[in-house]
Length: 413
Length: 81
Image (cartoon, rainbow over all chains, first blue to last red; front, side, top):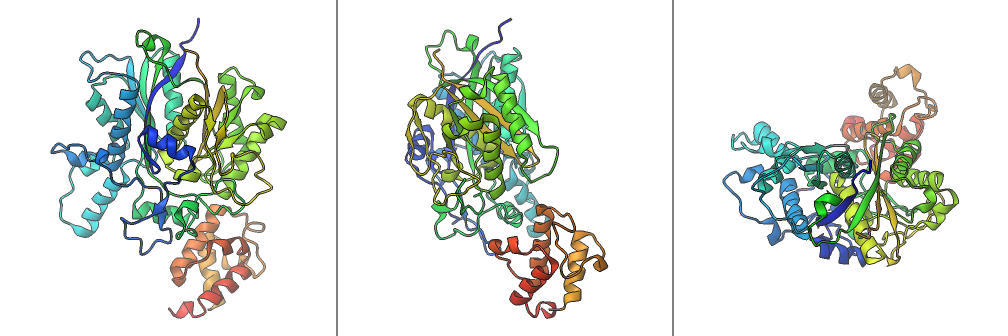
C-alpha cells in the first residue's frame, strides 16, 4: 500500500529579522541580523544585554477580547504566523463542518513564560491579586488551543516539548500522522517568547549565552566560528501547513516542498551535554525513513547554536554520516542571524530551507570570522549563494538530549 | 580570602568531603564532575563572594588551587564582605 505523500503548502513566520515570510526570506538571504540590544527589560542583574526580539509592529496588535490576558506573547506570535500560513496555503476558515482530519501540532519549549512570571511576581511580590487568566496563558498548550478556537479545528491538538528540537519534532509527528492516515492536514511548527529577566539570567548562569558582545549585538551569535562564545536567546514563530496529496487535490496550489523523512533519538546521557552518537542516530533514522542514502543529500540546515560543544559535535556527526561527502554538502545556520528561538527554531529553519530550495539560493552563516579546526565544513560563510538542490536535512538537537531531523525534497507536484 | 572557607563551599557544592579536596585536585579529572556541575560551582562562588567570573577564565579553573587563586585575586576580602 502506498503511503500518502506529505507536502508543505504554506508558511508564516515571525522572526527577529523579519515580520512575515517575505521580510524573513529577504533579510536572511542578505545576511541581515535581528539580534539587538535589549531595550525593554531591566537588565541590572544580568550580564547579557542582547537578544533576538521582534520590535513592536501593528501585526502584533490585533483586537483583543475581554480575555486578552489569555494571549501570552507566544500565542500572539503563533496566531500572526498561522494567519499568514493559512493564507499562503489558500485555506479558508473557520470551518463550518470541522472534521477530525485536520490537526494542530505545535512545538513549544518554554511556553507562556512571561505570563507565568507575572503570576509569580504578583503572588509573591506585588500582591495585588490582579492576575487571573495568566495561569491559563502560561500553559504550553495554550497557543495551539487558541488556534483551534480561531479556525474551528476539532481534530487532534498536541503541544510537543523536546526543548530546542520541539518544532522539528512537532513537524515530524504531523508528517507521521498524515503518513499513517490519522489526519489529512496539519497546522504545525512552533513558537517561543522566552525573553524575560528570569529566563535570561538562568540561561546565562548555565553559560549558554554569549555575554561578551553587548556592544555589537549583530555579531553575538557565531555558529561554527573559532571565536564563538555561546548563543543568543530569541523569540519567534514559524507555522507551516502540511497536507497529504489527497488534501491538496482540487486546489490549484503549488506546494513549497515535500517532507520525505523524519528521525528522532535521545542521547540518554546528560541534560545539557551534546552527544555525537545521538545526533548521528537521528540523522541516520531520518535518511532511512526517507529511503535515502547519505550520498543523495544536497544541503543541511544545521542546529548550529554557536555553543562550543554543539557546533563541534554536530560537525563530527555530519562527518560520521556523510564521510568524505560531508565536505561537499553546504551547511547553513540561521541562528547566526536570529539567535536561538528555542521551540520555534526547527520550524524557522525548515521554512527557510523550503524557501532556499524554491529560490535556488542558500542563506549564509554570518559572523564566521575565525576558523576552527574542529569545524571545517562548508558553512556558507558570511555570504549566501545560488544553489539548485533537491534534498535537504534540517537538524535540531535539544537540551535533555532530544534530537530530531527532518528531510525535505523538491517537489514536482 | 580564607582557603578553608573556600574549600568548605566547594565541598558543599560538589557533595564531597573537605578532606578529599587538596590544592592540586582537578575537578574534572580527579573528581569526575561534568561541565554542568562546574557551572553550578561557578555560580555558587559568584553568589557567595559577590563577584562575576569572566566566561573566558572558566576553562582555566579546573583545579581547586587555580580556582582559589583566581577568586582570591578578584575578591581578596571575600570572606569579610
